Amino acid sequence: MTLKALKLFGIALLIACTGTAKATFIHDEISVHYDNIFQSDLLSGTTVVGEGVEFVRTDSLRMTYSLDFTESAFTLTVSKPFTAGNFTGIFSALEITGIDTSILDVTFDSLNSSRFSSNAPTIEFSESGSIFISTPFFASANSPATALSHSFTWNVLFDAVEVPNPSVFLLMLLGLFSLVVQRRISRKV
Image 1 (cartoon, one colour):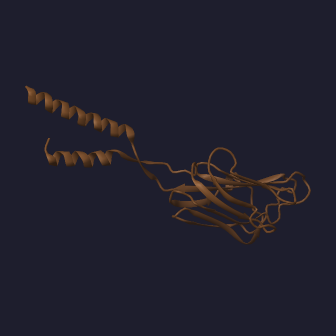
Image 2 (tube, one colour):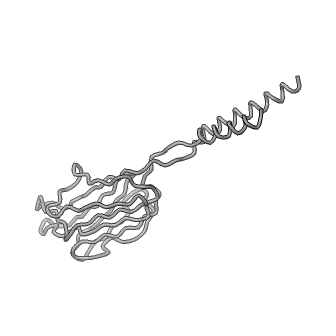
Image 3 (cartoon, helix red, strand yellow):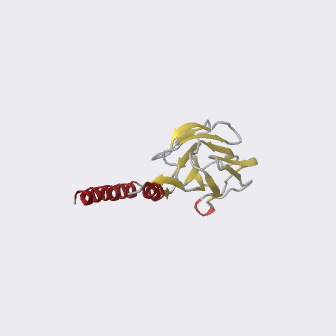
C-alpha cells in the first residue's frame, strides 16, 4: 500500500467514522432562574438534567412551582392545593443557561399547554445555549377558575451533533488489518 493510498484511507476513515446524533437536554448541566410577579428567584439553581423533575419549590402562598426537562422540551407547572384563588401573575421571566448544544428554535407548545390569559411571554434564545422567556409585566392563567394546576411547555430544536460512529470505525480497522495480512501473505509467496 502506497503512502498516497494510506492518506486516502485515513481521510475516508475520518469521514466514515463521524455521524450526526440528536442533541438533547439530557446530561446537560443547566442553570435556571424563574420569577413571578410576587417573588424573584422562585426557582433558581444549577442541576444536571436527567429523569424526573429538576426544580420544585412551594412558595408562601402554598403554590408549588416545578420545572421539568425532557429530551427536547421543558414544562413549567404551577399547582395550588385548593380551588379558591387564582393564577394571576404566575409568570414574569424564565432564564435557562448552560445548554451544551446550539439551539435552532424555541416554540411554545400551545396544544399541550394551558392558555395564558394575559401577556403571552416572548421567547429569546441564543445559539450559544441560553433561553430567555419573559413578559412586559406578568402573565396569568385563570381559566378554568377551578383548576388546581396549569402547565406550560416549550419545545426546543437543537442543532445536530457530530459524533464518532464506533461500528464504522471497527469495520474500517478490520479492513485495514485484512489488507496488511493479505500483503504479508502475498510477500511470502
